Length: 140
Image (tube, rainbow, N blue to C red; front, side, top):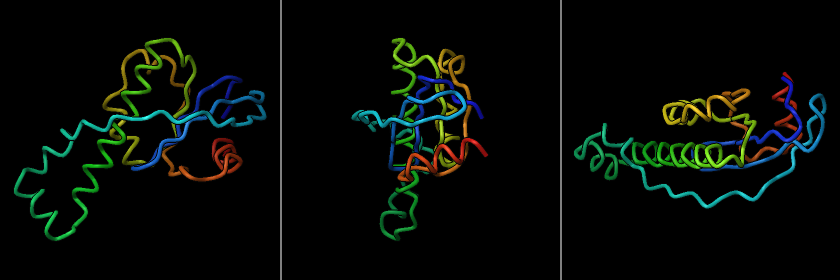
């Protein structure tokens, strides 16, 4: 996939958020790391569907359901941050690389303006990987 010069890349998983900008060319991207913003993971409404009894049970048994709620809240916080950046015209081209679960949560929150600047999505967990691996995944 072509990644135009200046494109912002958001690389996300259930706990990580990395932000890059393509400082290279369209055909030979060079991902320059940007400062990762502080996210406000206050939206735990995604976990409401689990119900209070289920959440208490998960806390006692360690079945991971609370982790799923935390991961959903993280993905929602990333999507909300990206929406703000697009609406404030600080991002005008965007590629999102995220694990499938986070990507699904994020898509539910995309503002219509974000959808207009979104060039591509890659449903793959690349968070924490070297920039060269991310570029290679985008090329394949």
